[in-house]
Image (cartoon, rainbow, N blue to C red; front, side, top):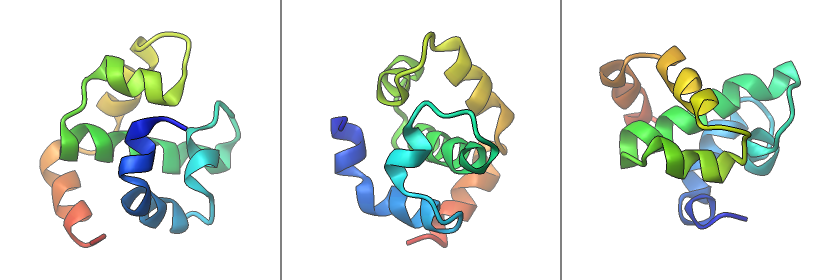
Length: 90
Protein backbone atom coordinates (compact mmCIF):
# COMPACT_ATOMS: atom_id res chain seq x y z
CA UNK A 1 0.00 0.00 0.00
CA UNK A 2 0.98 3.61 -0.18
CA UNK A 3 3.74 4.94 2.11
CA UNK A 4 1.47 7.57 3.71
CA UNK A 5 -0.97 4.90 4.83
CA UNK A 6 1.81 2.72 6.22
CA UNK A 7 3.35 5.68 8.05
CA UNK A 8 0.10 6.71 9.77
CA UNK A 9 -1.63 3.32 9.88
CA UNK A 10 -2.25 3.17 13.64
CA UNK A 11 -3.82 6.64 13.74
CA UNK A 12 -6.00 5.92 10.71
CA UNK A 13 -7.04 2.57 12.15
CA UNK A 14 -8.36 4.34 15.26
CA UNK A 15 -10.55 6.51 13.04
CA UNK A 16 -11.81 3.56 11.00
CA UNK A 17 -12.45 1.36 14.04
CA UNK A 18 -15.33 3.68 15.03
CA UNK A 19 -17.07 2.51 11.85
CA UNK A 20 -15.95 -1.15 12.06
CA UNK A 21 -14.00 -1.00 8.80
CA UNK A 22 -10.34 -1.47 7.99
CA UNK A 23 -8.18 1.37 6.68
CA UNK A 24 -7.72 -0.38 3.35
CA UNK A 25 -11.48 -0.79 2.97
CA UNK A 26 -12.00 2.93 3.59
CA UNK A 27 -9.38 3.89 1.02
CA UNK A 28 -10.46 1.31 -1.52
CA UNK A 29 -12.44 2.67 -4.45
CA UNK A 30 -15.83 1.49 -3.26
CA UNK A 31 -18.96 3.61 -3.38
CA UNK A 32 -20.87 1.81 -0.63
CA UNK A 33 -22.37 4.02 2.03
CA UNK A 34 -20.60 2.31 4.94
CA UNK A 35 -17.19 3.43 3.63
CA UNK A 36 -18.12 7.04 2.92
CA UNK A 37 -17.74 8.52 6.45
CA UNK A 38 -14.47 6.74 7.29
CA UNK A 39 -13.03 7.77 3.94
CA UNK A 40 -13.98 11.39 4.56
CA UNK A 41 -12.50 11.41 8.06
CA UNK A 42 -9.27 9.76 6.93
CA UNK A 43 -8.84 12.25 4.09
CA UNK A 44 -9.59 15.25 6.33
CA UNK A 45 -7.30 13.94 9.06
CA UNK A 46 -4.39 13.57 6.65
CA UNK A 47 -5.02 16.96 5.06
CA UNK A 48 -5.45 19.00 8.24
CA UNK A 49 -3.06 17.22 10.60
CA UNK A 50 -0.15 16.55 8.23
CA UNK A 51 -0.93 19.17 5.56
CA UNK A 52 -0.58 16.85 2.57
CA UNK A 53 -1.43 18.35 -0.79
CA UNK A 54 -4.58 17.39 -2.68
CA UNK A 55 -2.49 15.77 -5.39
CA UNK A 56 -0.60 13.66 -2.85
CA UNK A 57 -3.84 12.55 -1.22
CA UNK A 58 -5.32 11.77 -4.62
CA UNK A 59 -2.43 9.37 -5.23
CA UNK A 60 -3.17 7.63 -1.93
CA UNK A 61 -6.88 7.24 -2.61
CA UNK A 62 -6.31 6.28 -6.27
CA UNK A 63 -9.22 8.22 -7.74
CA UNK A 64 -9.74 9.41 -11.30
CA UNK A 65 -8.99 13.09 -10.68
CA UNK A 66 -8.12 15.13 -7.65
CA UNK A 67 -11.12 17.43 -7.97
CA UNK A 68 -13.00 14.63 -6.18
CA UNK A 69 -10.49 14.88 -3.34
CA UNK A 70 -10.95 18.67 -3.17
CA UNK A 71 -14.72 18.23 -3.01
CA UNK A 72 -14.44 15.57 -0.30
CA UNK A 73 -12.20 17.64 1.96
CA UNK A 74 -14.16 20.88 1.46
CA UNK A 75 -17.28 18.99 2.50
CA UNK A 76 -15.85 17.92 5.87
CA UNK A 77 -15.93 19.90 9.10
CA UNK A 78 -13.93 23.12 9.44
CA UNK A 79 -10.24 22.72 10.19
CA UNK A 80 -10.47 24.19 13.67
CA UNK A 81 -13.22 21.81 14.80
CA UNK A 82 -11.59 18.84 13.15
CA UNK A 83 -8.25 19.43 14.88
CA UNK A 84 -10.00 19.45 18.26
CA UNK A 85 -11.62 16.15 17.39
CA UNK A 86 -8.34 14.50 16.39
CA UNK A 87 -6.77 15.40 19.72
CA UNK A 88 -9.14 12.98 21.47
CA UNK A 89 -8.18 10.10 19.14
CA UNK A 90 -4.66 9.84 20.51
